[in-house]
Length: 368
Image 1: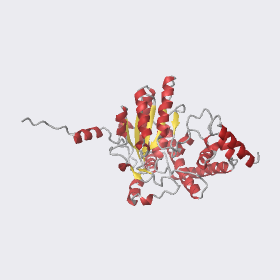
Image 2 (image 1 turned 30 degrees about the horizontal axis):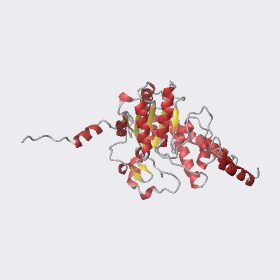
Image 3 (image 1 turned 180 degrees about the horizontal axis):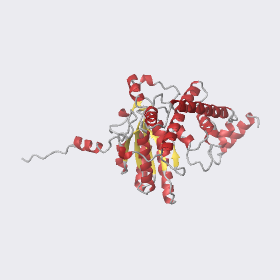
Image 4 (image 1 turned 90 degrees about the vertical axis):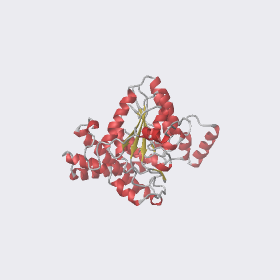
């Protein structure tokens, strides 16, 4: 009898996963550990990136307070994800199109959205979703992962029109477990559309650890099913995030099709300020581990070593940011109170007959 060798599925899976090693350039001590991939950013650009990250942390801290005071309708904290968000955003051109998730307010504002509008969006005010025609972004997506399908559609439109633009979109690890995620990357891959898909793996989909959502060793490897490149990057490393996002944009713009980037990061606070208590599902020791990887600390250390940063400079900026944020909060608070009739009028471009009747009914109640 001939002994035939059986196929080793475990070895095959391991060989596949070896292609998705995490990319890091700047380690937790603020030292360069991969000089071959250091991005071509000037000292001024490096400093500006850190300023943007500082601003984002200041915005987060203030927004958490506002939410606790009941002055925001919804807020998803972003502390810990500054590198994942601001460094990736920096890699894209002003003419590229953004499809953000609800935690990506800092990206929207850095792309040009007035901050007071971001606060109004959080309050559920219609003005918070009124963008100028030349502002190339959708409003933050609340439906988990739905922006991935939209991104594929926008990208296909760009390709058919011969536009030299790239679409970029974000979701979390929970979004990567949605059907919309797979449909979006599959369509984009099939039609080779210019989209950069970014999954911010912050470890938890509300209270569900990412390891319980999938048997995949990385989220980046899910790209293989769509026939597109997938890259895993240290999401707490601003230099690595920027370098990979920039390379991904160049790849997509050159007509090679989409790319999926997983930024392995952490959120330091609750999923949202709407009653989530991470103490119920998150080990206290994990906070200490991830706070040691804080992107703010490693970028600050890196710039200080280069003689580009000091504590006095930072304290002065924080005061400026706080003042700017307070002014935006006041402008949002002073906005005209939203009327129900106004909300109904904006539901559809052409209101249905039922909506027309409801609009007229509410206008009478509102005294118009």
